[in-house]
Length: 346
Image (cartoon, rainbow, N blue to C red):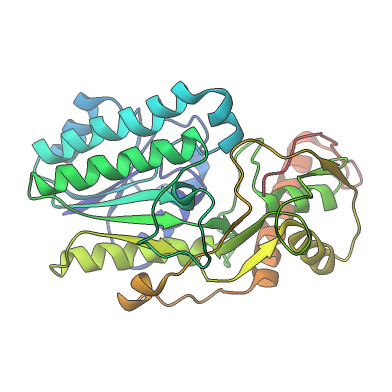
C-alpha cells in the first residue's frame, strides 16, 4: 500500500516526502505547483500535477496506486492574505479538503493525517497551550483550518477512516543534509526573510508591531525544525497503523522566541547586521503562541533539532545554495545582489 501526500512539492510536504523515503515508505505526490516546486520532489517519486479539489482525479489516484493513507498539506497559508481574500482561503483550504475527504471515505482509505495550524488557537489565554484549549481563530486562515478539522472529526465518526490532526507551530530550518529548504517565491517566514535580508537580497525587513503584551513588544512564536515536523507525520501514521484512535496533536518545542530575539539570532549566526524597520500590527497576528506537545511526545515523537541557532544555520545554508544557483544561472558574479521590499511575518 502507498501514501498520498498532497502538497508534497511544498516546504513541509517536500521534507515529509524525504522522511518517508528515508524510512522506505512509498509516497505518491499530488501538487498543483501553485507554490510548490517540481524540483522539491525526488525523481523516483510518482508525481502528479493536479488539484486536490478535483474529485475524479483524487479518486483515480487512490484506486490506481492502492492508497491506504493520505497526508494532506495542500493549502494556502499566508495569514494577512487570508484576511484580505477570505473566500480564496475557504475555497482552497476548506472546500478542497471536503472534496479530498469525500474521495478518501468513498475509496475506503484507512488513515488520514491532516496539516493544521496553531492559528486555530488565536490568542490563547495561557501558554504553553495544549489541545484542550478552546479554539478562537483570529483570521480566515485559522478558521479555514478549524473548519477542516471539524469535517475530519465528523467524517471519521461516520466511517472507518481514522485520523490525526497535527497543529503546527512556526516551521523553520531546512534539511540538514542540504537536500531541500524553503524555496517558495515571496515566502513570509520570519527566519527566511531575515536571512535573505542578511544576504542583501532584501534591502530591509519590517517588524510588524512593537506594542504586544510581550517582554520586548514583538510577537512570540514557537519555532519547530521542519525535519522534526516531517518525522512527526510518520509518528502519527504509525499510531494509526498500530490501531490508535483519532487524535488532535500539537507539534512544537514549548519554547517561544520573539521577533526581535530571532533577528538577533540570525545576526549572530550569519555574522552580519541588516536593516529592520518598524511597521504597524497586521490583522490576524496573535501576541504569543507556544506549544504544549506532550501528547505527541507520548506517541514517540522525539525532537532531534530543537535548537534555534541550528535551525537558522540549516536555513542559511539552503539560502546560500539558492543564491549561488540563481547567480550561476544568470551568469552573474557573486557580488551581485538583488534587493526587494517584501514584508516579514512573525
